[in-house]
Image (cartoon, rainbow, N blue to C red; front, side, top):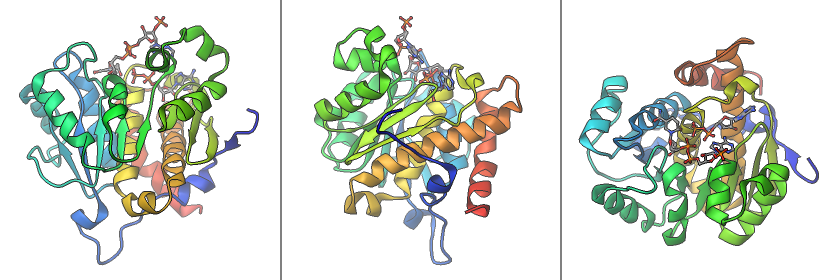
Length: 273
Ligand SMILES: NC(=O)C1=CN([C@@H]2O[C@H](COP(=O)(O)OP(=O)(O)OC[C@H]3O[C@@H](n4cnc5c(N)ncnc54)[C@H](OP(=O)(O)O)[C@@H]3O)[C@@H](O)[C@H]2O)[C@@H](O)CC1
Ligand SMILES: Nc1ncnc2c1ncn2[C@@H]1O[C@H](COP(=O)(O)OP(=O)(O)O)[C@@H](O)[C@H]1O
């Protein structure tokens, strides 16, 4: 993996924000989430579930009525009213070619608040209008679209393309695959703790939720040091991979089972650090 540093569970454990006695739901961090669409409503449910399992003061989900109803049916903890947030997660399950007016307006407003933002799925191109630090989470096909290169070139050398993307786009890049490469803030990290059973629809939506929660609970640290965003991205990948191991137990997994295992994965990381 060349000059990429392997990000290990011990490293990840240091990037978990444990609430203090004086913390409340607001001081811990509020994650604003603009994900899902009528075409892909499940992506919103999976991302919110994974974010809450990662630990965050509040998830504020903003989306269409149908998707909001599905999110609330699964997670009544989610707040669906607009309000202040510390970080954004935008784009998982967003219909890239058919973003509706409400989604465009919400996403555009989110991108100009100078807050740390995770961009996934159908919102990867919104990094251009962002005023805050951005981490994008493409798979190979999505990065090919963003950079307008053939997917085969990225498949052949993902580590190099993760670097190229970070340089060209000026954002932190988390490039998903069996090994996940993270480049940003002067760091080049790789996480490869995931079982191959993780190659299943919706797994990336859960990863985005995990990362969103980690970002929302570290906004002061990100403001102080841009490299923290890359460390959080690699941590999300490690947590995701370990939770997938626990959900899999050597066999197939479902993404909700993975999300369920995130809480125990984090407890395990903290206990062994
Ligand atoms: N339950 C839900 O609501 C779910 C919602 N989801 C949401 O759906 C949206 C669309 O996501 P998507 O990845 O399915 O399609 P899209 O971005 O158009 O891919 C473009 C092309 O890229 C390729 N390609 C794809 N994956 C690849 C990979 N891992 N590694 C390498 N290549 C890969 C493939 O090209 P091919 O290999 O066929 O040439 C594909 O045709 C997105 O917002 C997501 O969040 C999903 O998470 C599923 C569960
Ligand atoms: N062969 C593999 N081995 C381990 N993990 C994989 C493999 N292929 C994909 N993954 C992981 O599964 C997830 C798939 O995400 P993504 O492609 O965005 O799917 P979706 O859009 O359906 O959620 C990513 O976290 C990626 O790192």
